[in-house]
Image (cartoon, rainbow, N blue to C red; front, side, top):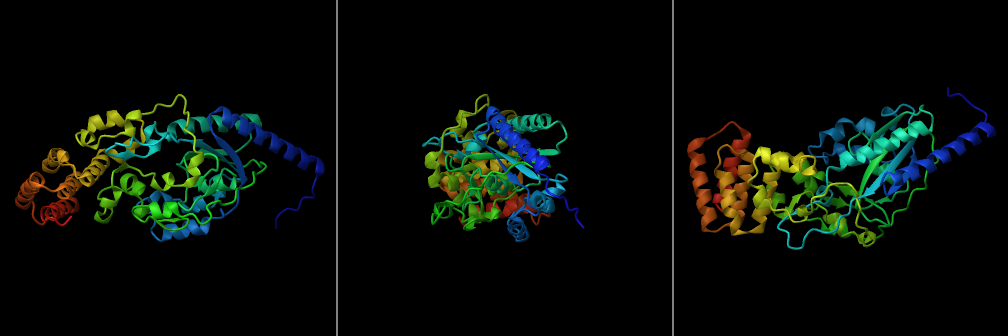
Length: 401
């Protein structure tokens, strides 16, 4: 039986005043640290979207993102993350940096034009959490995360009044658009909650219609297995052939569903003072990146989001983009990757696919050479990647890509 406590106007009123003071301090300090928004939501157990998340995960729509499923119970119950969890503190940072160069051969998602946001956002969020603990006297339980913890941060952000969840399942802020990165602090402090914002998507379905792979299967439902961001970042190994053409020139991630949202008319270019950015990545060069060795890859992308896909993933993506370009100038670079026996079978197989897409006498000659070598080199190979490589070369050589 839970303990009954008579209301006490003096102590309850004091707690409310303190809670309001702490919330006001949080918002001022978050702004000082560079965050564009800060809001508070009361913890609910389980979170309101728990059943939808569990059904999504059970249906396999998380693809190979096993870390989402592995901690599903904690994502749905904040009390398993912080004992006595009472409040979410959610911050957002605008990362809109303008548009890719109109003549770019490939496109990298905007958030990857700067250093890995986990690093610089987490540093600021840690300062906010440390300051709050000092402000309340050091007794509070706090955990903070930037896209790494077992929490449903977009749900918390929507309930904290930072915006609403759009039909593409991303957060939309009416005065900033879609271009937001989120961080959360989960605490046992009871803070006054901010009012949530109502959904303003209405009948709009631009994001649904614009997705090249049909990943937004219904309003507010995304199948990650079809999403270009998932295919080019999260997925390891082979990109399913049925999605390669639809990837187009998207080399790392995809902003299409964000770009078409009409609320972006209010987007503002982010200042991001003191944060290194790579302006050249507005115009990435997949043919040059295709030549990167392991050491060069690590040196170029150290501390940046692209490092996450590893060299194999980046070169695989370069092959797909180059194949979709149809540019004969890419044949020699793709040929080097395909015929290099020390190269990853995944990269070699995607290079074969790309050569088949480009076509022409030079590409066909390379594929014929590769087919001859592979037929002599390993028949009925037990290694699944090498067997898949042979199948990719056969398909490309026969013109069936």
